[in-house]
Amino acid sequence: VKKYARAALIGTGMIGGSFARALKDAGIVERLVGADRSRTNLERARALGFVDETAGVAEAAGQAELVILAVPVRATLEVCEALAPVLAARPEVLVTDCGSTKVEVQRAVEAALPFPERFVGAHPIAGTEKSGPDAAQPQLFRGRRCLVTPALATRGDKVAECAALWQAVGAETKYMDPLAHDQALAYVSHLPHAAAFALAQAVGAVDAAGLSGGGFADTTRIAASDPVMWRDVFLANAGPVLAAIDKLEGALGELSRAIAAGDGAAIERLILRAHEGRAKILGNPR
Amino acid sequence: VKKYARAALIGTGMIGGSFARALKDAGIVERLVGADRSRTNLERARALGFVDETAGVAEAAGQAELVILAVPVRATLEVCEALAPVLAARPEVLVTDCGSTKVEVQRAVEAALPFPERFVGAHPIAGTEKSGPDAAQPQLFRGRRCLVTPALATRGDKVAECAALWQAVGAETKYMDPLAHDQALAYVSHLPHAAAFALAQAVGAVDAAGLSGGGFADTTRIAASDPVMWRDVFLANAGPVLAAIDKLEGALGELSRAIAAGDGAAIERLILRAHEGRAKILGNPR
Image 1 (cartoon, each protein chain N blue to C red):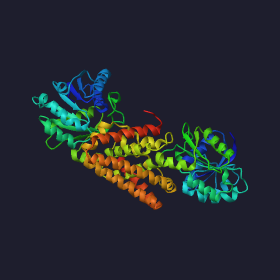
Image 2: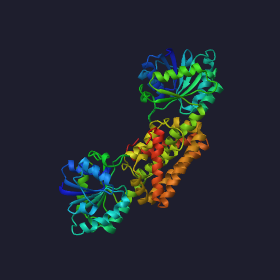
Image 3: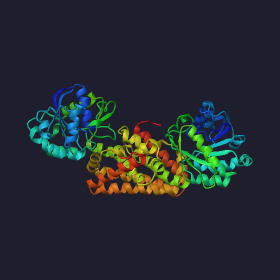
Image 4: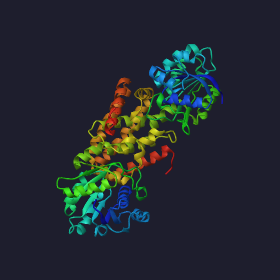
């Protein structure tokens, strides 16, 4: 695996911080310069030690051989505009990201980044409801999948360079088209977040503190996720997310109608379909 | 705590089996006679040792000093009808249950059980998505809450006798009116199950096996729950459950509209409301 004497991390939250820590632990990145819109996060990342120097976005990337974007996805365009002047003369610098949506990120990169063919989108399927530099863990990606999403124009050698980074931190890489990524993730990730946010709101509106069990705790765990990150995911992937919410509303409506009709056989069928759907997505045939 | 030389367990699944194992471990029940519509479960319960003898419903209760119902809630009426002849001459026998809904159970008891004032409904807030006698664990109720739901006519000494059983197996008891119980549980428990069933179905309908992470796994864990148990919960508590599903649909609709309108500030507000709702229900002020 290629080594980098100097890398830039734009965004020092849980995912970016975990990637940085893992890359440093693996000896792949020697010196890491961090930039973050939040001065609190940036100083905390420095105090925690996974960021060696702090800087503005352009300055951080000034001499970096690798630039990692780990910002809420809708900040990508602005970050690429800030990076453009310092990356225009160095087309070999690999630029990658960790965002949960890929089509709009790719579009922002192609609009603003010099030599966008050296940009490789990536999305590690890891993380928790926590956020910020203190939640960064170097082991976060071990045994997890990382979806690497080259676009048509992306350079093949850069795709391999990016995949090698994720493999080096313990992830299993899988290539996906950005559009296919966003459509699938709208269901397996964005919809569960939408459902958890809505469920926590609906239940939270009633007077039932202390009466819940493990079911409520688990179904709403991810409802504690970062508002800005998820605002951006929903907006950046609005079409597929709205279609997925529609499907959930359809399934809820079907269950409602079966309950209202007192149709026990229909309710059982819906529950068995849920068993099958879950097992299929988790990859456990049953 | 009162000891029972002989108790009857009607229904030998995860909850009934866990309660039986815990009561025997605590030395409260000496000999346990089990009955179950499923001969497989009943024989398994006997093989696992928490049931000492197997019998039909009436026969199991014939000489019991304590009768525990742990059946899908809609089976309560039929079980009480079967118990009536053997319990008519022994009004001191405590009859209790473990069901997830309480109003319809209480109604069934009052319709069919001789001396219904000795029946005390209870609902331990414990359990997992697993089911059957093999999922029974004597530690299941330690540190968990058990809602004890006396009706207007219930005898006070029997309420105390029932609460003592749950305290003896490690649960913290709390009294609730059956109607208040069903209305609150519709939100904190039945709605998360409905949401998880619908979500697993909606996501399972797309081609995305192996792409999910911890969010999908956790939000749909309880979608693997027993179909017959949950069919009965939804039917027995149909009114409050339908109202709760309505509220969830409302919250999803609000999120959809904010996404469709590109209204980032509204999305953030909804997510923050979800944070607050979750913290409130879990009893963690934030």
